[in-house]
Length: 80
Image 1 (cartoon, rainbow, N blue to C red):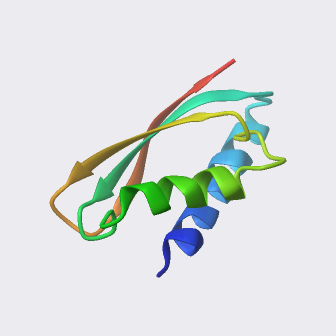
Image 2: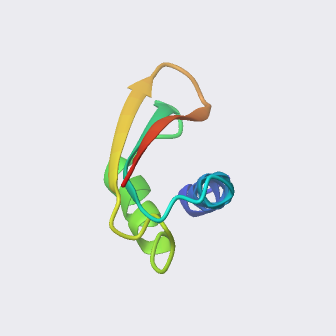
C-alpha cells in the first residue's frame, strides 16, 4: 500500500474518532511506523500534510516513531 493510501486511512480513522468525541482541533498526532513502511520519511510526512488539508488535522504536528516491522499505529493525539 502506498504512503498516500496509508495516510488516508489514518486520517479518516482519527477524524472519525475525534468527531465522535466532539473534538474541534487536533494539535499533535503520534504514529508508530514500521521501518519497512517508513523508507522515505519526508514523502510519508508530505502525504500526511497534503491529505490533512480541510480536516481536523490540517495544522497538526506529526511525530513519527520508527520501529522494526511493517505496521502503523496511532499512539496518541493531543486535542485543543
